[in-house]
Image (cartoon, rainbow, N blue to C red; front, side, top):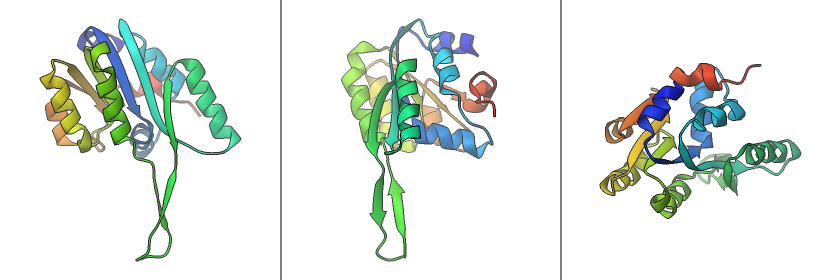
Length: 174
């Protein structure tokens, strides 16, 4: 599969990982991602310029340790705290930590530094971003799973990688 990444990721490469989307995609299929293995797989891109990892920040030691490992591995972390929204119509609350805006803004800030964007998300909200990147001559690769990717992203992207096809390369063993 690494040869596929090299084949489709042309020129300078920037990678944007929506961690919650990636983790949920793997979890729903019964496995977890080993982020060191994922980084190694991504490093095969010849001119890798950026690997952004967008994730919620929890205030506990184990999560801090996880973030430290990611940073030492080479990921550029973009974090924010989990937002808890009280639900007035029902008992309870909703947890939220959406990074769509942060990913889109960072992609536009980085636009001069890459030729190919690899997006780890299946969220249809990124359709407009991909449309704009392609209008500006950028290639876009979307990585997700069949059950977590919108048809719009598959159609709009230059290439789609089903996460299940790289599972053996990036899976965390129990």
